[in-house]
Amino acid sequence: MGRRRLASSGVGGTRETQEMLDFCSKHNISADVEIISAADIDDGFERLERGEVRYRLVIDMATLEAPAGDTA
Image (cartoon, rainbow, N blue to C red; front, side, top):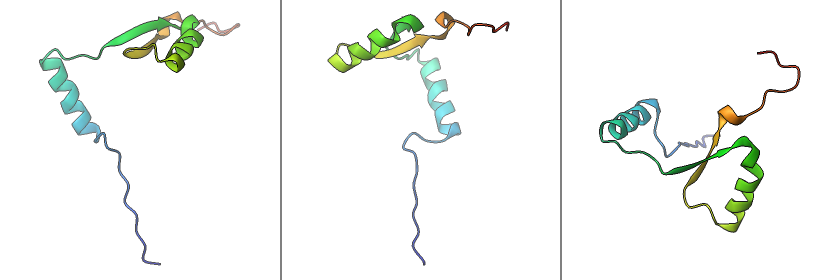
């Protein structure tokens, strides 16, 4: 009955995350990424499986197509 469990994320909270982003901005620190189009997602997964991705793959969301009938 008296068992307790404490769990936490190792990345910190909102304040710590904002401090880290501010520090990176101030010191011009950025991540190395490779931007791919939405059409290349399958190829990106295959490259990940083969270990051919050197950095982080980022999908360019501007390359997504709107669903048929979407007028937004």
